Image (cartoon, one colour):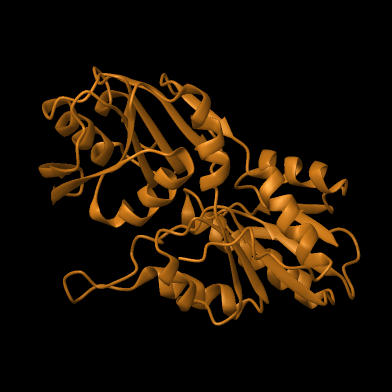
Amino acid sequence: MKLFAGSANPALAQAVARTLNTPLAACVSERFPDGELHIEIRESVRGEQVYLIQPTCPPVADHLIELLLMADACRRAGADAMTAVLPYYGYARQDRRAKGREPIAARLLADLIAAARIARVLAVDLHTPAAEGFFPMPVEHLSAVELLADAVRPALGVEAVVVAPDLGAVRLADRYARLLGCPVATVHKLRIGPAAVQVREIVGEVRGRSPVVVDDMMSTGHTVAAAVRGLLAAGCRPEVTVVVSHGLFVGPIEQVLQDLPIGRIVTTDSVPPRADLPLPVAVASLAPLLGDAIRRLDRHESLGDLVVHR
């Protein structure tokens, strides 16, 4: 196999390469003075299985274009087949038209990836499993839930309760609850703006319990902040843990979460962790999961116990 790393998350790509005991293949990414990207593959890929490790994290447009250029360079150099390894898939939340005159961006990006002749996609915790249907090629949809549950389990609070911060996270919360042996509660929210969320009600018993708020991603922190305030008002213990597969942590998230009793935020390295973030963030690496999946794909073995089934 040949592993290539884009510029989105080179540390994760290096870690995946170490788990496979395979060096990253030589690839150079440069910018022309006008901002255009130039990609050059510096070793033969003719007849090879190629894996392109590139989460489409912010800036999404730059990292997507880099992925497409890498794929095109490998195809024109004679690669047998290419797999896009997308630990994080940008624009996944734009998976429907909420008001009518809007694009379905998640489908459009899938079409662009297909246009680059990529044969397979390896993704981690898509915003919705239904997003697999946007891709015309096979999608191996992995989940970080088990490794995140393992990371959280040793420090579970008193009488913990797994909390879905909105209705979209209910199934995810059920999966965590089964692994952790905890009950589930759901926060019903109302979004009143791009960065404003209001809690309407909480379904489930949270009084006197330590909440474990789970979601697929955390961006500005407003959804989590609103959920935590609602939980505190409902009488939960001031010992909150937040678990997310993708920690984007954009904008002044530290101000959004300030004064909230969040003892730990557990996430993965699907997106490069922010070193400057003054929050209690613990990172569980995806490298073993991705390495195992790539190894099995290269050997034509089953991924049945790694993929998301619902």
